[in-house]
Image (cartoon, rainbow, N blue to C red; front, top):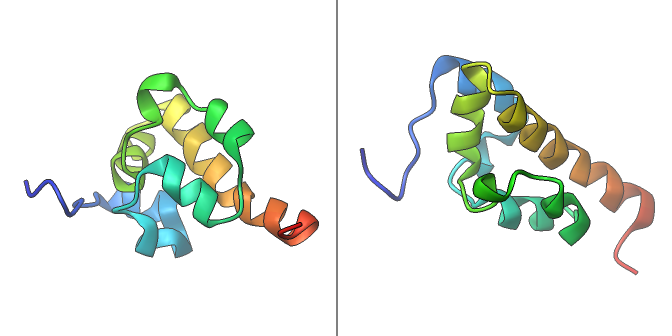
Length: 87
């Protein structure tokens, strides 16, 4: 498997939904990109903070609850941006 591009499983793809374009980003970078902050990143399991979004989506698709939580945090980061903006 190529290290630069993540191959999503069908379940992983379903977990990401409309965020497929973020699959090759580190989860911490993707959360910040969507408006989240360090506090959201700190909620992730420490060994998951440096994984790519696609890797976490695949794990979530296999039933990994911590990976599922990471994807939920990523999705909620946009709500934080909408609510608080970039002040």
